[in-house]
Amino acid sequence: MPSEITMTVDERRKYLLIMRPRYETADRAERGRLLDEMAQVTTLHRKSLLRLLAGELTRQPRGRERARTYQAPVTAALRVIAESFDYLCPERLTPNLGWMARQLVKHGELTLSDAVLAQLETISVSTVQRRLAQIRQDERRLPQKGPERANQVLREVPMTRIAWDIPEPGHFETDLVHHCGRAASGEYVHTLQMLDVATGWSERMAVLGRGYLVIQAAFRRGLARLPFAVREIHPDNGSEFFNQHLVRFWGAVASGVTLSRSRPYQKNDNRKVEQKNSSLVRAYLGFQRLDSGVQTLALNELYDQMWLYYNLFQPVMRLAEKTLVVHAADDRPHVQRRYDTAQTPFDRVCATQAIAPACRDKLARLRAATNPRQLRRDIYDRLERLWTLPGATAGVVEDVHVLLPAIAQPAPALL
Image (cartoon, rainbow, N blue to C red; front, side, top):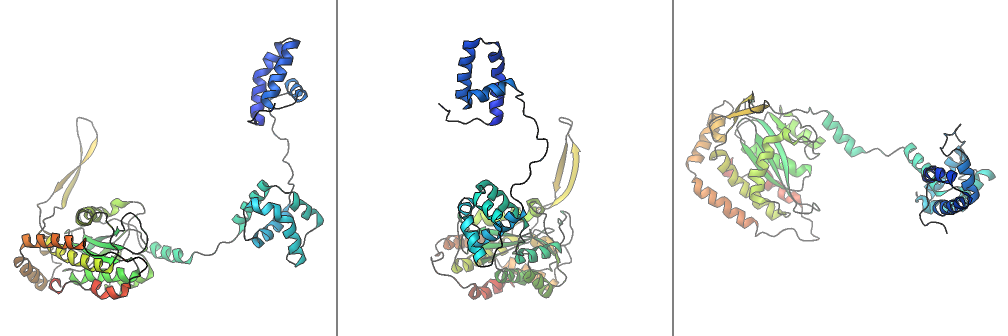
């Protein structure tokens, strides 16, 4: 009785190589029993087993390449027939090649000889699968216009990293934080964060979606309340930052701004803003979903209060020195870091020539008139109110154009 598991040719030969010494040393009765056993294991006839045992069991390489059974006319016909069937899978296509070929010949779409038609009716599914794979490789693909344009913009922007000891303000690491919850479906709120490497000055703007209109409005909001000029914008490689619209925006609104980008998959190129994403965004909002216009506006009001609190009242330390030292204990080099005295971002900006005296005096008066403890209570009160606001209504699409004026303009007191 044949075995339920079929052995491959190589497996049969390996098995017979093991069995042949036993067969050659056995007597006549034992040889008969061994042949019965080998026939049951290999599913081969006894005569086939005798021929194999008497010959060379090691498989020899083919002397010359076997000629193709199905030539170019069959492949050309398959190309036309597969397209006519709208590229069915080989299992569905192969049994129907014959009648479709005759149908196409009848309507003048194909010219086939009787020999090619006969081959189309006998070709196997596996052969059709291989030929279709070759056909797909040969076909011209439609141009991917959107990604090409985005890649052209990226190719024009240098990959670099803002130096940790850069002295002048205005070099901003930029990132987008998603507030989608567990499912990144539909439109939801994002936080656009900008962090100045030299001073620690930070800007946060909430937007609904990430189209170029709302990203532009968010940048306008940040630029409107910055007390010093922007010299460089340094985001990751996301298309929300690098597209023709944003490039035109930076050329028209803030001429002289340098655009640079991080290396792909190197999050540490934006290490400072990534850190603030954790401490100034996720620490407050967590990973909950925000997806309505009213939540977007309320979050921007919260960020206005945080702008005042973190830029004027929260001291930050800046890396002042990095030294490579070798410890005697393990003889391995380590980077030793030293930080300067903690100062607020506002004080750091005032220590440079980047801020105008009138703007400096205005911010100084604003800080003097602000109760930081009450400001902190206001921040947490606004945060509690944010979670009471309704999210998006299923089936209702919000018009982001209505939100653009409010997104682009910060609170008057902060201008």
